[in-house]
Picture 1: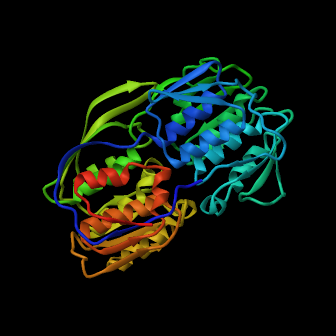
Picture 2 (picture 1 turned 120 degrees about the vertical axis):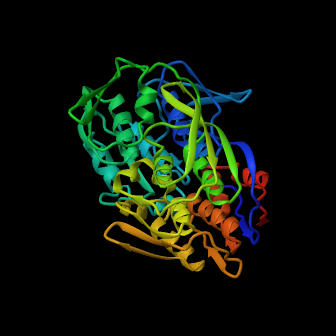
Length: 448
């Protein structure tokens, strides 16, 4: 599914910069808009979609399931088939590529469509990721996965002939919560989700224009999401904002590089996604959100970042759910900030595209930064801003876009002679990354 393999070599520091940029569109919202558009009525209009490898995987899966999708003047038109109408011949294979989001959400949709018997697969990185929690939850809707007691892709899904709504106590995973909501849409009765720990809420926001379908109630400090099954969905008309996770990497660069300033236009600042910015602001970062507006139940704004003198970061476990994708780059910031930074409650990072704790520790060790992980907390012994032009860094093929991007930022800030293998994996989320880096003054070599 991914584009041709290439490596990146870096051996020069980036100069100071003062720029205005746009980042790639939000991946989470792009994938959700296509999936929900496919099971809605009539034609959905999706503007500014992210054209990344993960989104291409989504388009390929939907086309195999009989969904007609076209593109004209930058707008995607998704001819919705309605609830319960996606279908492919028995034993057709759907390949999710590198996308955990696509895998979990699509499995949610397929689970409550009768007469589905399909093979599900992904790339080598996705195959390593356990789907045990998801499979166990979907089994409550009446789904079977074959072979039994296997929790990784490739796998066969046999959908429930008579799906009935369930009660589900949500954890910190927005993907599992979304899968339950999407399975509940075509199940009989009501699916109730009890959420006492906040997680990304893009799916709820996208469904909110269907008042008969979704009700969100507050009960004490908890949120209760009720999905009324078998109700038709209205088509979407949506413009997708810039991805706050992709923006974080450029933000980190501006914060650390002396004399730099950056304005990033039209970035999503959904309250469940801004932990990175809130944490850094608490420890001295000069970050401002301006020109905020709401469209399609999502809030976005321009982000302004100035070079800042940071204090060591102390991230309690509450930050994790609001900044999951940004932890690798937070580790780089911590390494370049003098003092001991502590990140608590991060054990789930071990089950991402790679073990992001271990892999980032290996990278930091190569530039002489010590770290220690124990009982779900990571300590990074930051050296402050330092020159590492006498050091060599090698990042092997991990199939992890966030590790590649974080290593790139570390290299252009410290001057460490760095080789990052299989950099094409960055195209899963941020296909414009290298182009933007080049516009900011970064020098690098592409080796095919």
